[in-house]
Amino acid sequence: MHVALVAALLAVTLAQALKVFLYRVQFGSWDFSLVFSAGEMPSAHSAGVSALATTFLVLDGPASANFAISAVLAMIVMYDAAGVRRQAGEHAAILNRLIERLAQFFPEEERIDFLRLKERLGHRPVEVAAGLFLGVLVGLLLGASGLRAWP
Image (cartoon, rainbow, N blue to C red; front, side, top):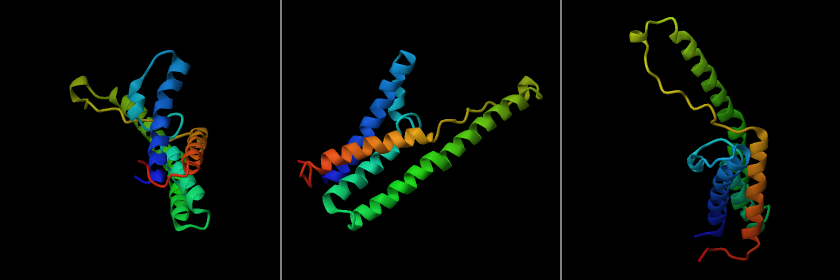
């Protein structure tokens, strides 16, 4: 397996594990469901793509096609995380409140049960930056390891 793929997977895994640990620090209890969740601190998507790009930067240099492709991918993913997906989450919050308020105008037997929309889809810029930092760190460490393929 190519070391760039290992770096990306490791960065994502570390980011998801960090979410659980940071929740414990903030709230005093463990929430292992965060391992499989989107959103929160740090951005696992940002960590993965930045680890991939950084590893290719170290291994192949800034003029390589591998770095160029992975850097563009990283920019798109991080923009999406902090922009598009975050706004989708804000829309979900508004829809959830709207549905709850409208429900009061209908008799109980006419109300439709609905699953609340997930409101934390994207990331705040600081969460994207934390994922970027984690990914760059992992990419630098594994890229500098001298390995091209993981045993």
